[in-house]
Image 1: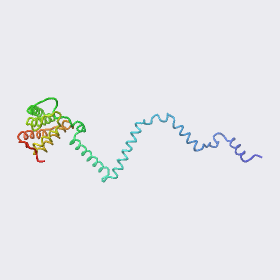
Image 2 (image 1 turned 120 degrees about the horizontal axis):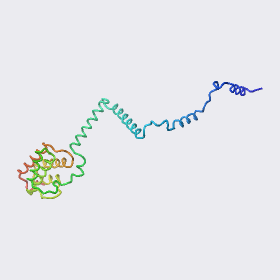
Image 3 (image 1 turned 90 degrees about the vertical axis):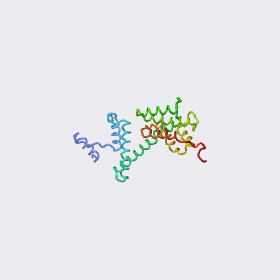
Image 4 (image 1 turned 60 degrees about the vertical axis):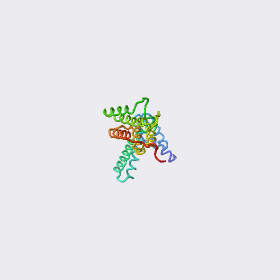
Length: 226
C-alpha cells in the first residue's frame, strides 16, 4: 500500500509541465541573488560619477539648510533673502572702507620711492595726474608733497622708509590742530596705495586743501604739553 507522501509525489510527476507547482526560493537566497545581479556593470553604466554625486549631496544639503532657515526666519523665504542681502551689503561696505587684505601685509612701506624730488615737484606731478583724471596717482603724489614739505620746513627729519602713518604722527606734535587731518590723509594714502581703493576727485581735493593749509600754518615749536 502506497503512503500519502508517495501519492503526492507521484501525482506531481504525472502533471503536465505547465501545471507543475511553483518552485519557491528562500528569502535570503533570493535577496542575495538579486543584489549580485544588480551589481553587474551593465546596470550602472549611466550612474553619475563620484564628483556629480558629491555635488548633488552638497546642493541637497544647501537646500535643506535653506528650508530650515526660511522656516525659522520671520517672513519665511522673503525674510531670509532680505537678511542675506543686508549681510552682503555690510560686507561690501567693509571691503570698500578697509580695502583688500593686501594693505595689512604691505602698509609698512615708505611714502617715497627711490627718487628724491622736492615738494614742488610732487605737487606738479599731482596736478598733472589730476588733470588727466588719474586720481589714485594724484592722491599719492599730493601726500608725498605734504610729507616732503614738512621735511623741507624741518618739521620732520628726512628719513628713508618713513610710512605715511609715522609721518602723520610725528607732524602732529608740531601741528596739533591738524592731527586728525594728518591721520586721515595717511589712512587715505594707505588705502589707495596698498588697499586697492581707487582715489577720486573729492579725496584729492581734501589732500590739496590740507597741503595748502599746512604750508600756511605756523608750527608749535615747543610741542604740545605733556
